Length: 310
Image (cartoon, rainbow, N blue to C red; front, side, top):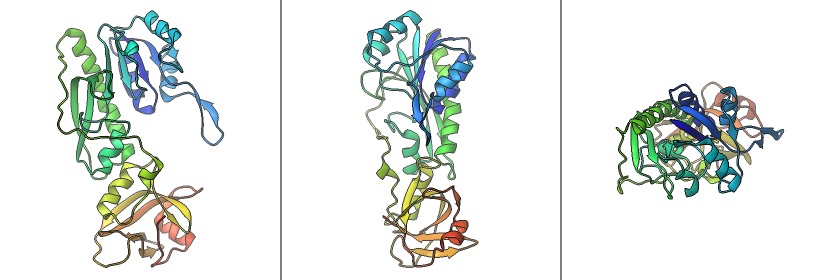
């Protein structure tokens, strides 16, 4: 098949590599325009563009997906199928163009976790399983007919970074299997169930704010669901503290949530929650590099009875 691949972040790069190495022909890659990034605001290409250039695949970077110039460029590519992995919402004039339509790879077992941040929300909600789904694009986000799904176990110590990488690898294999099945006619789409629909909305700044009144288990899931980026956070002495690794521990005492109940230069910090307590293993103080919480105790003189909170 002649494929046009659309994607932007690192998550899409393994799928692009996989398809380029297959019997199919990736005739073009569509990705976001280069943007200023980092402290120096240096103009930087997307991860997908960098991969496409290494593979010598032509790159298109439209600002308007409905523009006549972009539509004509797509038509000139003559795609049999458009493949989407972590890209923008496509207009019908685009996703309806190829003879096999357009397919999307989504990091959940649809209809669970429809939306922009399925990996994060599966962890935040304490799921023990998730997976990858391929489906046909239509006019409503993440609602198209299902093609294939693959279930993936979530380990108790998985965080966003580790689960992202598991799903990235599984997704590339599933995508190739889907394309092969469409080409030879073995794969028949199925309607998504109306049951079990859950949202996975875009993360906001408030998503990561730690409410110490919640249970330690809930906060542990929040920490791992946002680690290593963008990070669950709290405040200490009016300075933002990003918590990167933690553990829920039993605590039968009745301290106010957010209160430091252990501060050790060797064992680090433990903070009371609405139920039980959270031991901080790794954190990142505002404007500083990440460090173990024991190192933080030594450098910032945290004491039992101190308070974390907004």
